[in-house]
Length: 618
Ligand SMILES: [Zn+2]
Image 1 (cartoon, helix red, strand yellow):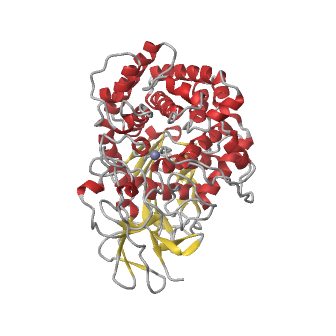
Image 2 (tube, rainbow, N blue to C red):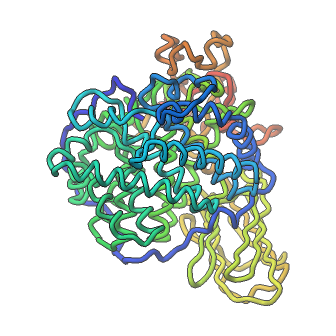
């Protein structure tokens, strides 16, 4: 979310066209419905459970308070704080995320409570919509949209509307709530009328204000209903000023607010999926390659102060307490998933894994489920979690969704078989083939995974297991205990196309090693990785009292706003290899030379200072 004081400016820089895949109009690869995948015990299931408690711990009547008041209906609930406070212009946004989170939790775990909560909110929102009678549904008055139309200050009305529409559509698509579809169609009709009153020039001006993924949700509505009219409304939110250079292969992203753009690009990707127009695929692919390849940190995250401030490839000077907004990672994962279904490119899966483990997993406090806004990448900072149930940042919302869909993108299928992209303990019900796949793994604590096929009858399909680009020497596989000849090269798939019988088991060893990821513009500034895991050096907790580890409602929400100091970047001495594994503790490393500074995965860092980038001698 654009915090108000970040202003976007535009500066152009021409770059050569980058690698693109040949266009094919329909997706080759299909994701599995979330309801077909159940997580099994491990760090991902632990995190999903923390979030489930966080989401179910919300008070529905408090969430609905501003909607009811805005519709002239009674509400005696205590208003919430933060970005859901009655005077906040973003109020209502979290309720949209909440609906998505309830739908996702229901789909991924079968928790009936989550669906009931979602149903209750949908019914209440329908009542609010009926009370106003125009289709308009929001926790703030339409007057904010008048201001938007008239170029007067209004934070981001369509951004908020997008969250509510997306939440309703998720309740329909994932939780079978028919009323949610009626409500979202009412909102879409209101949106159609509002946009019809504006000419293209006025609409272009409106699109300069952050509007989330209004194009995406309207394309999704067109897909769900089969009603082409919603495509026309969606087109009004396709932002040509941003799309044009991307379609032409030019990176003009410098100066832009990051999370304002990515949802639009997801919308462009949806347009391609619905219409087959290759231009929109070019936009999405060029953007993805540019951002993940040249504008992302070793963690897979991007943005500094919520913006791209520099030319592509300049990262060493972009390390601050405001780096890597969590919503950005959430959105990049969505886009990556789309690209994978078009291409089956293992680089998409490599990126997804890296951003998931380093940019999502450690961004929730395991104690109470509160979420991070930024993953600070300046040295010596810490994770400043929100105040539980009181901040309602944009990232509180996207985080509530991220941790509700950790079973997503582990598996994909096509006509030939199955893709196993992520090493996460889970069970897949592959209904179309009558097959169950059980993935047993203690990854990343152990660098291997096992896949067991359950099938009442022998069945032929290709089982493709991703062999990540980070795989060190010695990767191997065993089928039913017998070593297989050969192995796939890192950055590809191990493919076994055969007749599978009930109980067949494939064991895959994926050795991990420490590697360094230098910033492209300064090779002496490096992040250390173990396999896909970014490692962080532990820097103690000096100066971190209780009032500074948590953002409090009455206090600022970012570390720099606390005027708190970081620590100098750790300088490593000697030469590579820089780190050696601790023989006693898993996933723990020490500097090879000097005073044995301890490194652990970034996702495990909690309530202490840390450093991701270190200085190495050149
Ligand atoms: Zn955010």
